[in-house]
Image (cartoon, rainbow, N blue to C red):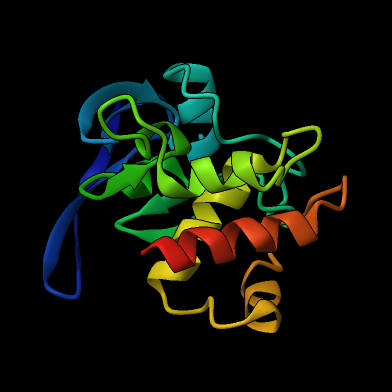
Length: 174
C-alpha cells in the first residue's frame, strides 16, 4: 500500500494523495464492508468481478455503451466499467447479488423469469438493475418512457418486448 504526496487542500478540505501503487480501499457492497488493496486505476467492475467474486455485473463493452455492468452507488445507476473503485469509498454499492432478500428473488428478478425477459442472459443483471432503478425514479409510465430510460442497456438478443413486459409487471405489483 502506498500513500504519496503531502496533504492537499481542495475547497478547504484536506486530503492525502494516494497511489500510484496499490492503496487500501474499503467498499461497502450489498451491506458488507470489503477492504481491498488495489491500484487507483482499477474500475469498480474489475474490483467486483476479479477481487470479490461478485460476477453478476458483466463486462460487455468495457466502454460504457452497453449497460451490462450497471450497478447502483447510493441508489443511483452507474456503469461500473467507467467508475473507479476508489471513488466509491464511503458510498453504498448494490449489485444484482444484493437484490434478493431472505433467499427470495426481487420482484423484478421474478418478473424477468415470468415474462421470459432474457435469452442468452448476459445483459440480464444490468437490465434488472436499471429496471428496478427506473421504477424508483418514476420513469416507467408507458412503453415509450421505459424504452427511453432503458436505452443505456443493450440486449443483443433483442428481448426488448419481454423486458418491457417484465418492467410493467413489476411496476404494477408495487
